[in-house]
Amino acid sequence: DQQVKQNSPSLSVQEGRISILNCDYTNSMFDYFLWYKKYPAEGPTFLISISSIKDKNEDGRFTVFLNKSAKHLSLHIVPSQPGDSAVYFCAASIGTSYGKLTFGQGTILTVHP
Amino acid sequence: DGGITQSPKYLFRKEGQNVTLSCEQNLNHDAMYWYRQDPGQGLRLIYYSQIVNDFQKGDIAEGYSVSREKKESFPLTVTSAQKNPTAFYLCASSISFNEQFFGPGTRLTVL
Image (tube, rainbow over all chains, first blue to last red; front, side):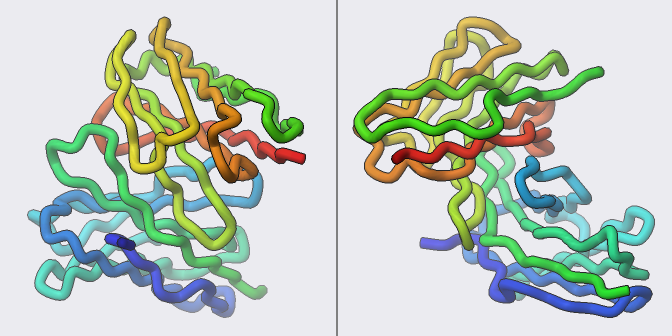
């Protein structure tokens, strides 16, 4: 049972444009969401997170939006750069579940110069 | 330099052999985790440990074992009972219960 889903396996955008990566979840108990970026043969690195008490969190070029009623979150990257090309994972946790991050399958982002 | 190290980066083993993957952190984090990544799939939690001498099963613990004798170290043993051990293994640690820092990973191939 995939509780966190990233339905787009890949996304291709032009440098300078906006990249929008989407993530859906089914478990209404999730109350904290994270995005990780991963290069091949490396470990993921934390990008940005959002608590369920917010609907938006911004950090530089990265903004995460949370729509609780739709159980949907998205990561916006503006402007996209070739160095952003990587696999992006969304993850979710339930507040008291120490360490129990549930990850989506990942979306491969390719930013073309 | 603070960080998480995993060794080796690539590991080959014959079917039926147990193999131990190393994970060390010098971040002074209390919690440590092991994940497995398969092609086209997200990371799946194998085991995690919140404190020394204590650990919990994750979603796919069968065929794996861990120990946590020191705060800095959380080795993972892939036993011969693991039906499909070939995968990319990632270790992580955290000081808060959500933001986890990952090591570079070990790619295990069972021949």
